Length: 330
Image (cartoon, rainbow, N blue to C red; front, top):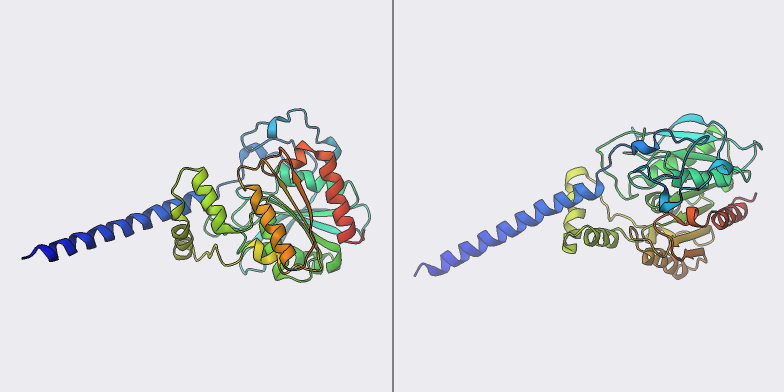
């Protein structure tokens, strides 16, 4: 006689436990995927005038223990502080002027959990500088010596305001014309640069190395890579909104490349990338083509995440320099 209410109560309790469990698991996943710590200590001595191609653990990247950075070293940089377009966010940066005061400038942006001391940011900056470009390197918010808000990255959906702050700084403080400023990013820096260019039509060109295309898909990839159930992807996005007001799905690099028709875009990705699968790079190319854009592309056989610049340094330099010479009219 009382069996139905008992069963209904048991079902409700089970659903409640499942929902609560899903919520807790989602928060755990969100925290693990988005928490940013200090810039790796192995890079502490790196700067434009002295750096090595070692990873965050101090070991040579991709086993290239004989990689010579000497050709890519730059003069001692000017330490700068730059205001993001987000009020209250201040960015630490390095500006390395070119011998020609009228040279174009490329803003070079590091990846997730890194900083401007990351050799995969310093190397392309050195390649550009030795070919006559000025470079501006910044720490995104939550990274390096820039403002720490909550210690979590927002997948470029907020950080793009930092890149645009750097773009504004070059426009106003250094009087650089917009058609002489380009963006180059690796990993999260590439995704953020694409979003920034999509929001600021004055950006002349973007070099995107190893960017994700769609964050929810990248989260599912990362969950699978780390052994978590992929159905936690939605929960992780919701957790970001609730805990820190970060809408990780607000805008994607794929959305942004659709705004770049008529502007210069280069998409490169290692085909052996196990951090951001190469299909993300191909998806960005497809999105660009769908909008009428014709990006330059280079999918590099055998190279892992952001490592084409080490595996094929001469070719990487040739391509990035040629791209920005056209994009920025050098």
